[in-house]
Amino acid sequence: MIGSRTGDTGGPEDAAAPGAEVRGDGRPAAASAARKGGEWARHWQHAELPGLDLLRARYVRHAFPRHSHEGYVLGAVTGGVERVGLPAGVQDAGEGGIIMINPEVPHTAQAGAPEGWAYSTLYPSVQLVAGVAAETTGLTGTAGFTETVVADLEAVRLVNGVHRAAEQGNALAADSLLRIAIARLLRRHGGPLPARTAAAAGARTAERARALLEARLTSPPSLEQLARELGTGPFALLRAFKNAYGMPPHAWLTDARIRRARQLLEAGTAPAEAAVAVGFTDQPHLNRHFTRIVGVPPGAYRRERAGGARTYKTAGEGPS
Image (tube, rainbow, N blue to C red; front, side, top):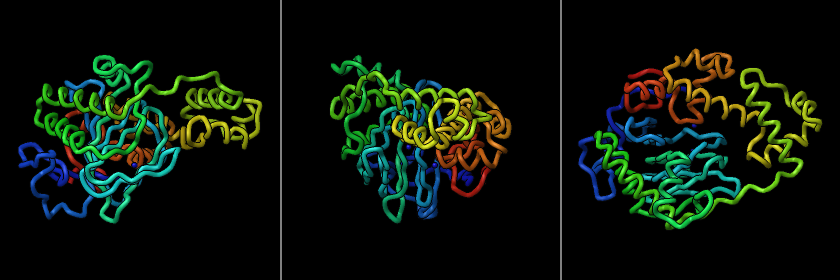
């Protein structure tokens, strides 16, 4: 589901690096003592797996602020405990647990135990999940997940297998395991997402506010100015927006800026230029918010898209 944190560590301790000896669940047979206690993360894409982002990480102090994703989140916890904050409450996922979050669902994430948590996460697009659902299930409408946290060691093995195959350059195996994992989770924990109903007055106001913020990403109005343009009061707008999107306008705006920054970085834009283009005052401002929400700093994110460095410690921008 998130300071400045990079540096090449060689390979994660709780998920198999290419060529490492692995157990039946896809985790390494032994962890490197030199890496214990540290934070690391790799957020990347495989050129032959369109519609999918991958993240493997171990976090201890790091906490993801409230944010959402355009696509789905499928996280396999391989160590420790992840605590996920959702609109309906807080849930903990321990080792062997799978976290499933539907598109645009606001959530937070942080450690649920002193040792933090390690996980392998897949971010499949809406189109990818819809294709798997149409081919393998009888679900009608938009397919989604009806549970957030379940214990499923086989699904954990499959998610780890996607990462391992992708890192070894085996796109055929990675794509096969990806689709098997999605189909398994949809059959066991899936259902149609609620259809959108006619918006009430507050929801319509929130939707108009969102459109205005999207149009003025780099120079947004104040809350009072926004409310005045929409013909409502600031507190009424705050309530309506949070009810509609699960977070206040300023938090939603930061999330939207980070999404746009990701697109620019993926296209090769330098972090300093991306920062200005999405409305941040400077690159350190982008670094701070980007790392909190995405889990790696923008420089590391851009290098991965260009085929650069692979795994990053939480120790400062740039490879160690």
